[in-house]
Image 1 (cartoon, rainbow, N blue to C red):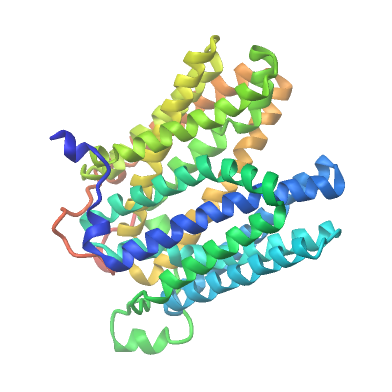
Image 2: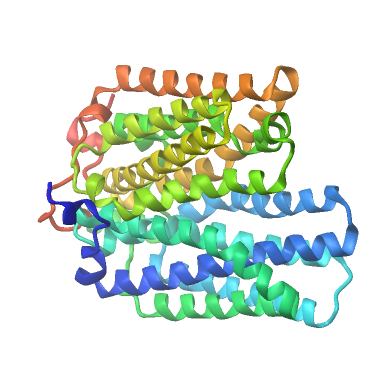
Length: 432
C-alpha cells in the first residue's frame, strides 16, 4: 500500500458537500462542548467547593443520555432524520444561550446550572442516533469508514485542544465567555445541518409506508440479536469498555508509582488522546481494508492487552507507550465498529440500532470505571488494570471464536453506492 493511502482518507470531504458541512459543524460543536464542560466544572466548584456536586455533573449529563438515547433511536426511524437533527441542535443552542445568560447574571444556584446541563444533554441524546446514521446516508458505502475516521479525529483533537482553550478563556474572561463560545459553535452546527437534504427513513413498499407513517416497524432489538455481525460488534465493545476501562484507576496508579504528581496524571489522559489522533491521521491504513469485523476484533484485543501492559509497566515512558497504543487501538475499533454497524443495519431500523450503540458507548465506560475502581479498592491498581485488560482480550477472543460472520465480514468495495437499506434477516435467511 502506498504511503499516501496510509494517511487519513480525505475522499469523504471531497465527494460529498453535505458530509463536509456536517463534519465542519460537528467539529466546532465538539470543541464548544469541551470548553463548556470545563466551564461547568469550574463554576460548580466555585459555587459549592464540594466534590459531591462536581460529581453530580456526571449524573446530570449521563441520566438524560441513558433515558432519552433509546427514544432518539425510535424517533430517527419514524421521522425525517434531517428534521430531528435540526430540532435537537436548535435545542442545544437554546440550552447554550441559557448557560451563557445564567453566567452573565451571576447565578448562584447550582441546581439551575445542572438543570441546563441536563437539558442540553437531553437534546444531544435525542439527536445522537439520527446523527450517527448520517454518514452512511451521505457517503458511498466504501467511504463510510473514512468518514467516521474524520469525525473521530476531529473529536480527539477537540479533547486535546478544548480543555486548554477553556483554561485560557476562563482565566481571561470567565464562564460567560466560555459558554458564549459554545453558543457560537452550536449556532454554526445548526447552520450546517440546515442545508442537509431530506433524509426520511426508507420504506420497503407502499403498504409498509402506510403502516409506518405514524410509527416505525417493530423489531429493532430482534434485528440486533438475529444478526451476528451486530450483536458480536456490540459484545466486543461491551467487553472492551466494561472489563478494561482504566480512567478511574489513573489517580491511584499515579499515587502508587509516580508520587501523585498531577502533571503525570495529565500525561496519562494526553497519551490516550495522542494515540487516538495518531491512529486517525494514519486511518487510511484500516479504512481501506474491507475486513472490518476482523479489524475491530483485533483492535479491541490490542486495547485490552495494552492496558494490561500499562498496569504492569513500572517506568513512566513504557507506561505512557502502552496508553498511546491503547488510544490508537480504541480509535481503530471505534471507526471500524461504526462503519460495520451503519452498513449492516437495515435503514428502517438504523436509528434504533444506532441508539443502542450510543447507549453502550455512554454506559459501558462508566460501568467500566466503576468496576475498575471497585476492583482496585479490593486488590490494587496494577492487579485491577492487568486483570481487566486480560479479561477483555480473552472475552473478545471468545466472541471471535463463536462468531464467524463477524470475523469474515467485509465492507462493500469503494465504488459501491451508499447502502440505504440492507435486507432484513426475515427476507435474507440470515437469522441465527
